[in-house]
Every structure is written in C-alpha cells, then in structure tokens.
Image (cartoon, rainbow, N blue to C red; front, side, top):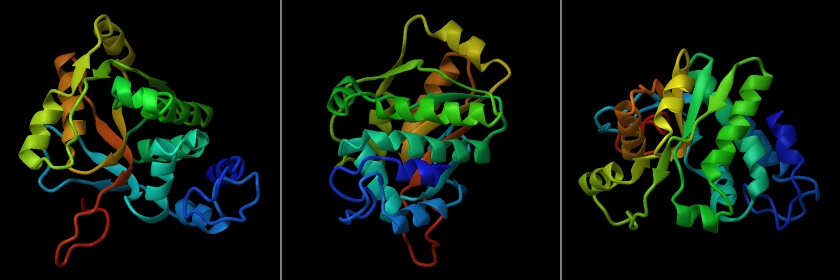
Length: 238
C-alpha cells in the first residue's frame, strides 16, 4: 500500500528520495528508493541523555539516506503529495508504540512555517495516519490542542539552551482543553513529529498536555537523528 502510494505521485523534477531523473511520470520515487523505504521497520529510540518526562518513542528509521530526503522533500521542497505515503508509514510507527484506540497529537508548526509550507505539515501527516489506522480497523482520532509560538533559529544553541527554548515554544489553545480530555478518554495518546533529535520538543509538548490533564503514552516519528560514537550502533540509538 505504501509503495503504491509512492508510485502514484506525479513527479515534477525527479525522485524525491535520490533526485534521479527518468523516473516514470506517475511515480514519486524511483524503484530503488521505494524498496529501501519499504524495508524499514519501526524501532524504539531514546535520546541520550533523554529530557525529563519524555514518553517512550519509536521511529521508522535513522534520519539519513532516502528517508531523510523524503522528509525534506515533503517538508521543505513542496512535495506535498508525499503526505499520503509518509502518513501511512507514520501509522505503522504508531502501531509499534501504542495499542489502539489512539488519539494522535501532532507537534504544530509555527504560523510562519505553516505559511511557507502551505499548511501545517505534521497536521497533514496526522490526518493521513488516522485515516490509515481507522481503515485498517484501529480507531484513531486527531487533536490539535497546541499552537507553536514564534521561535529563533536553534541551530547554534547548546542542549540546555534548546531545552529552555522548547519549554516556551508552545501554548495550549483556549477552549480546547475540555475537548482534548474527552477525546483522550479511553485512548492511548501519541505525540507525532517528523524527526526526533534531542527529544526536547516532544518533552515540551508532553508537559503541556499533562498540564491540561492528559498523559501522553508515547511518541511516534518518521526518523531519529543518530549520534555516532565509538561502539555505538547506527540505530536505534539517538
């Protein structure tokens, strides 16, 4: 199903995974990249050190190679059609980390990022993941209880500074708390994001949900950034 969705995308420039030209018009990725993505299996991941309060996390694969290029193509290069296959893949990660029924809570984009991306990229993935799960007999809903505040570039921040910035990066939407609690009743609550690196963003979202009276059970992401060190495997360590 995932490979079929990848193959059904219109290809405007080249393969979204490797950039190869000559891919048939109705394909989003070449056969080699589709096979590489299809071979990935969700794994438990954990940043080292993990920020306080971070729930159990899982990712489809390491943030590199074809998976990294697909995420970037979807997120920042205008390949919005990838929402369908990537959301379907994310649904598989959700099933690996939580029992259904589930309530999916995507990490929100800032207003600026959503404008630049022509919509909130994680909200699109969450809706597709919920459709995939529900169609397969796993009840799933999506909630949008948070907004993302404007934030400065964190590329040059150290770990402590990133954590401090993440703590102030979100706010709870007024009037959404009671609805969130109702939807969460009897469901596993899973936070969704595209990539986990330090875990501070997921921990910050967790803190806001807990303050609203909802305890997240797990986090599901497409990819995990790998920190390589002597004797460390490439995955699932992050």
